[in-house]
Length: 197
Length: 217
Image 1 (spheres, each protein chain N blue to C red):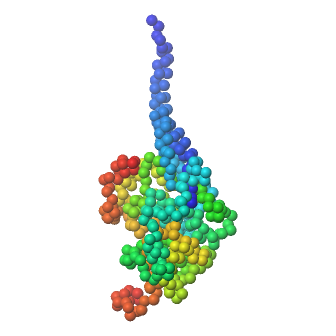
Image 2 (cartoon, rainbow over the protein chains, first blue to last red):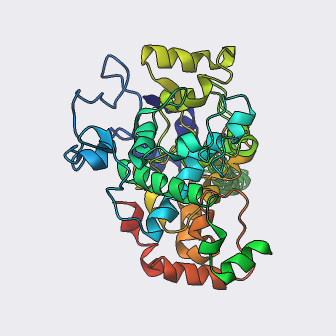
Image 3 (cartoon, chains in turn orange, yellow):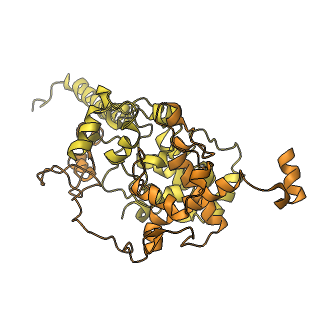
């Protein structure tokens, strides 16, 4: 979707500098700075639309991305949002989810998930808090679907967050929700002491 | 037999030898300085873009991570320039009538890509891969500088081979904990003990890093 043009001026200047320093021996050396290879998103004079990156044929499936597993790729089982996770929840997955949540979700939803991120403070309509009862009661697959397809004013994050990372984000979201509703009796005395400090 | 050269030519010949040495020295020095200067490398020269995108505003002002837009940085050679979709994720609601963003909206409406002038243009004979650097503890800021202070984007390093080698020979002076990759403010400590530990932890084979074939493939 983006094109990058390279400015040719520095190449000319480089050639002058090299020619001054090394005389005729350097003549032609700068040709190799820009060979016929195309860099990602570079502009093209060959194709009519000016882009070297060709649009994908509709229906193209990247290797390894075939949607054979409904639960994993849509968050649904038999067409209904599932609350179960299609991946194993591990500490590593939660760490990854926290990292991705903070990168992609926190600008609006805030690091705590209460919907007061910086972009909201700058005027973006405030999303519901993840801690409200109506949002908490949604099944895990629902969150996966929102990340994939967007919701309301939220655009799809499918281009930015790969499927497995989306599940990591949903898992972290569950941890975030849990963090506000833990019964005191379920904690060890050491944990309680840490919290009261 | 008469002398071929007039006695005065002795001065001329000496002067021409000296002059030749001086001219060559000056050319080499001036050419070398030119080659390293911002005039040739464009270091410190903000690039004018059709949309005056400010990293300072988005990174420093709003706290958006580098990875929000440059999504392929940790798994691909190319860090990625975001699709217009990413810009419009916020700008469909915020500054959605600002004239300065009209090219962005037009791109979204028509599907025609925005054009950007490349800021970092590595010579094509040098192989470079973002993902390996990010995954082995090289932070964005190490090469790209304080992007969070750039209202328009410029480069802060020459991308000359000597600059690459400085880190490839002494990675312990530059590598950082993985949690700090996107940090703009992380600073290496004065002693390199922590860096040496990270080099070991990341399994960086320092002795190969200055092999020709690492970068010239």
